Image 1 (spheres, helix red, strand yellow):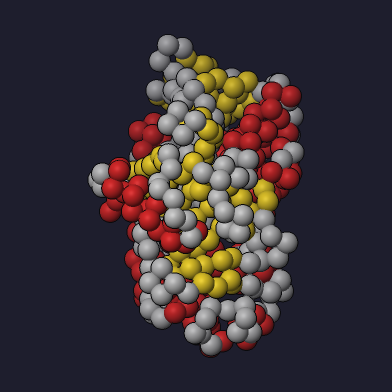
Image 2 (cartoon, helix red, strand yellow):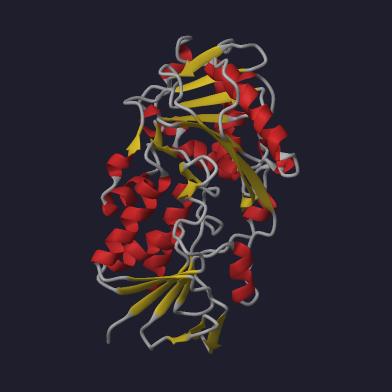
Length: 413
């Protein structure tokens, strides 16, 4: 009997599940409450700036294997660009010092013995304690495993882990931090090349996936918000969208790829994260200086990462709950002053936009990590997906795509 798979949510987790299922030859229908796909990982035309920008700035590393496989599947692997070898620029706003971190490609980290590749003012033995994170238990915080001070922490581990975990590192899960380090820094520079969607997240990760689904006769329903799930015994039998209800046949199944509060409201007694952290993104419309690197990490500033695009400079600030109530104009001015210092700009603030995501990701603490469910549910034909599910990684693009793949594999058995 033919099978239809319903994917609820067209963010990266839902799209990766849909692409995987459609590629296996199944009929797929994607239901999205919003009028567009992508969730937090999307591009849109901003009226204030008069250009297309990303909802948030996202970075992929060359070691994110699920993301790169997904890009190859949807035919957009060339949409991410980065240096041929691992190289990340940093600036310390307190001292004005600048440096470039250059891990070598192999797993043996000989770069820490080369003063020209490591952080200024550090010695090789300063890097060794970070390895403890790779063997941390699920219940441990980072500050229980690692001293959260010193130049390696302040100039590398803090900005790197804050960006990955979106939670201040001392209170964050040491196990999640260890998973990130294991797949990137500990895997060598070949896994640490920064890759950026120069033409936007939509062009790289979202639009090509929608085209693949259309070619494979998938159906995409925008403005289709799931209101309730009809349950009978160990199966779900219907999907209630308010104005219409979709019955599920004996072989049909569904993947629920929605934010955790929505999933918890739809699925009885679901364990899910209940605490979240904000991200603030800023965009400035101007052509960046020719010598401005595509990505710069900022230490001792409000700004954390600066992205240089052909027509704009964008900024990301993680763990940004403290900035949610700041007046927009004051916040834009503060960010611009730091951007000007880093980019050596003397001109007045150009047209700008601030994007605040209040519940961008779950709080990556041990307690919240323990609340993350796996893809399986008590119902045989319903699976869960999302960067908030138990992927073994924090809430990242890589985690979202892995969750979609895992949900597809679980439900298609």
